[in-house]
Image (cartoon, rainbow, N blue to C red; front, side, top):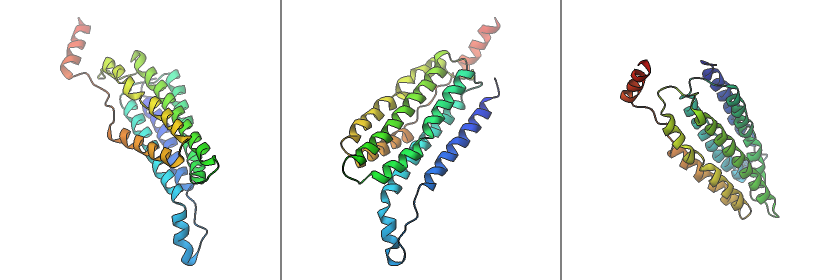
Length: 215
């Protein structure tokens, strides 16, 4: 299935684009009019905050997804299903974002429950993406020849940090929904500023390997 990576990435990009569009559509139009209009806008700050955080989370997801596919020369059937699993989980983010925004400042436990739901989906995404990356690096047969396969496997631990950080936000959600949203914002900023490079084989080593194979 060589030359299929572009098709799969284009399909995935379309899904990410739709998800981000849905995030915007979840922002509500203020019901207030006249002198109360700006008051109505301010009252919806939980929706704006949740939108910004979720946009960053999805944006980082897309960047990581794009980075991986830029290093693949082919795909196979298991990878297609793992990619669908990742997209399935990401597609739920607009729903959990809206739920959290609606209940963020409420009392009586609904805010905490909404935060638990929101964090739970991010945990599911982290595990799905980790499974995706582990499969890609397990054998390395899908990578371009320039990719350092052993070096790529060494990045598994850093790729898997989300599987540790996001469960902690679930615990935090039982204490405070607003703090949970802040925690997700900080995690998204960390991943946005600290992308994990996939190591490449230096040109001399690659040429030497090719020479050995010809012998």
